[in-house]
Length: 423
Image 1 (cartoon, one colour):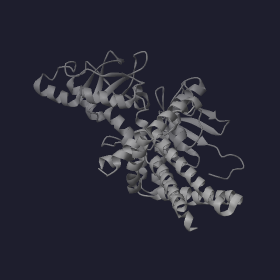
Image 2 (spheres, rainbow, N blue to C red):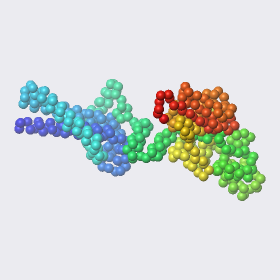
Image 3 (cartoon, rainbow, N blue to C red):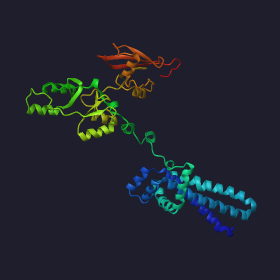
Image 4 (tube, helix red, strand yellow):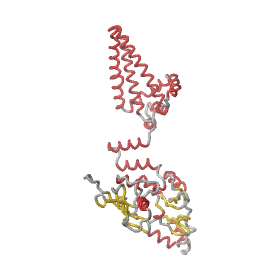
């Protein structure tokens, strides 16, 4: 065996190189671009090589595949040549089995398991070497990139982008592991959904908006501010659809000190900011900050006044309800008894389905639970007590409270399924 020392040594080197490329593949492919940027910001040695490789993931993958192919082929060739010289023709089978075992255990499985558990220092160590090899293999990489499109292989498959759903999955994993609290999970989910939320989804509908006419006196305005607890109130002319301004309680007090008390509020209010109901609230927040106002008047496609959105409404989409001394804390869904719930008629059907884990029908003709009742009845309820059956009688919706023609509270009764003793 002495005469085969050089060949055996070369075979061992090839196995070690196979292990290097296999572990490099797992270590570098698994690390994200965000993590690479974090390492660069921390000033870690080798981090710039990691970032450069992650900028061209297809180059990284091709480099590793080229290197791995070269060394595995060399290992197989060397082992076969030595085995034939020692065992003759049967040496081919022996070499094949031996090479498969060695490369599988010591060149693939072992190194990849190690790389999956290794710290960032491992990636930082191997990255400069792989980056150097990618530059050496540049001609081959160039040729592969020119040929690969003909086989339907595109760059977009090299490293899929991180989607919003994947981020939510990571948040869920963090919650399960205990590294993320329930409140943090809710806030992170709210941030991800923030850009998709429209003004219509969070606005205070027109029917709930407190407004004043532009002919009221300062004393009447102060009385309304005092009764509602609001610091800003929309002002209309002739009818509530015609919003002409926003009145700030501070401006009223200032005007009362410097002007006659029998003046009106026309010259004190400031111009309203009108936005369409389809506007995304992240863009709306930026506009409110630029214009330095706290309230936006929401209009529909026909330029009719449909509601208002405040900065507080937008912030509550991230941090949850912000309660002050004038707010009355009341849960959106109140569990009265087993299978019986009371909800605000202005709650969206989709939100009720999510919170209560039921399946109320959703349609474009309505959004709220009150709208669902009106749609099914075919008319505005004449009095509390009117009800509809949903899902073949499995759920009953009952009008509990009304204010004029407006539904205020709805009772949801979930009937138990016959033969099912589960609550």
